[in-house]
Image (cartoon, rainbow, N blue to C red):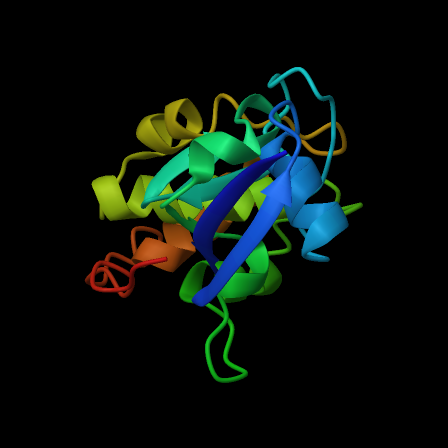
Amino acid sequence: MTRISLTVDGAKVADDVEPRMLLVQYLRERLGKTGTVVGCDTSNCGACTVHLDGTSVKSCNVLAVQADGCEVTTIEGLAQDGELHPVQEAFRECHGLQCGFCTPGMIMQSVALLKDNPNPSEEEIRLGLEGNLCRCTGYHNIVKAVQHACGASTGSTNQTAGVTA
């Protein structure tokens, strides 16, 4: 067992973990963060995307011990004080989901994309979400939701530029 200490969604945690335990397993099984979805266990689908020290990562491809000393933000950590994060709200408003399985990873990747590029083009959005798969949609409403979140679809100024995950 290896002792790790990290911050998850603003809460400090310390735990003993097997060195081979994946971060996604730790989040789901030990901390009950079941919004972080296991889709493939091979880092292909992106459903398990979280932010590790502000960087988007596929948590099925990171060992829990690698997160020692880090700050992890999951889909559950985006909403603050009962208010959805602007990207979550945009996905809701634009119907950027169908079955919902890929949605947590899509939202986490979208937040990271908008943090790095507050006003992306449609092509930049599609490229930014390339590592996240949706098996239900043609991605149209997902792209529309990201455009809506940044104001690109209406030509207004970016509403999420100052919002961090």
